[in-house]
Length: 208
Image (cartoon, rainbow, N blue to C red; front, top):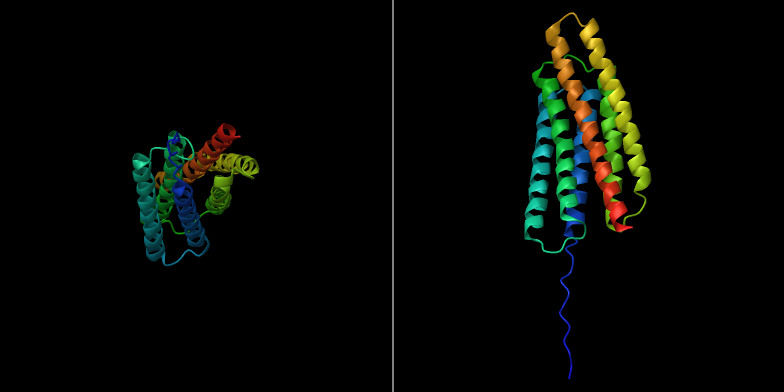
């Protein structure tokens, strides 16, 4: 008598491809913001481009969440899929928020500190894109987590220092409040990058 074993349900691997698409899109948004602050012209066109990238990020996030709701067995824990997708989307939301505020607040020129913070976000986005592309194989991920934490600490120091200086040195409270909002958004983007590192670090710990 032949005993038929139940067929195992394969884990859905498409999540990794969707994460890669989300990370690449986020990096594109960070690069567009970097171009905006380095080449401070044609603002409306550049902000609209970043908004389009952000909308694409929303679409990818929606696809991931929809796939998650329809998938029985996932390659990593469901809560990690949800958290990673959300944090990637949050970074891009913060990037779009910085770009739109530079435009709608009628900022005449980005400060050197603003440019430094944008550079940090861009470097963090590059690290994230590389880590997410390696996530399926769970390799070379811990150095990424360490570098992201370093970048976030640097961003935090710059942002706090500049907000303190604004409150002490900027005579026009309206200008001070505008820059406080922009620096806050940049710090938020860095915070979400660190959150991504924490999620990936957690995934590595659970799977090794």
